[in-house]
Amino acid sequence: MAKTNSEFGKGGELNTIVGKGTRITGNMNVQNSLRIDGNVDGDIKTTDTIIVGKEGKVKGNISAKNILVAGEVQGNVSAKEKIFLQATSSIQGDITASHLVVEEGAVFDGQCKMTDNKNQVVSPQQ
Image (cartoon, rainbow, N blue to C red; front, side):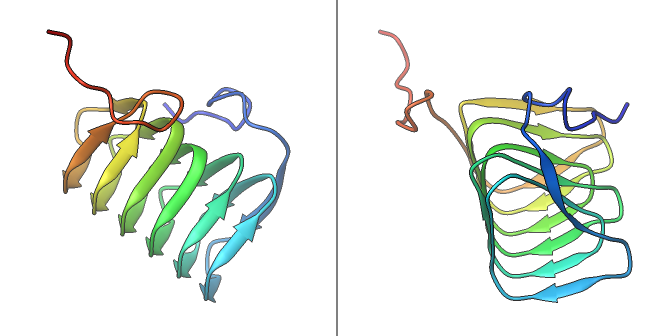
């Protein structure tokens, strides 16, 4: 089941969309939420939510408050709050987040580091 921008992490205004058939080469810095249904070759940063749709492909690192992946990412993925990997997602790279949700069928090849909301590594309780 796909999440809308308002359902996932209560993201802000979705003002940037990379549509299907669009290819962007270079780094992107976005103020609000971003949806990718095309191809991006470069790093992506936003202070809000990034959604990589089923047709979306990213070759580069992603950094945001919340990240939802339904497509393909080749690069590291870092969220201050939550990363949601849908069943159709494929990630080749490391993941860093305070919350991680992985649907059955998602493919993840890398390491995962869980943090608290201040982006510090959480140590196991003794």
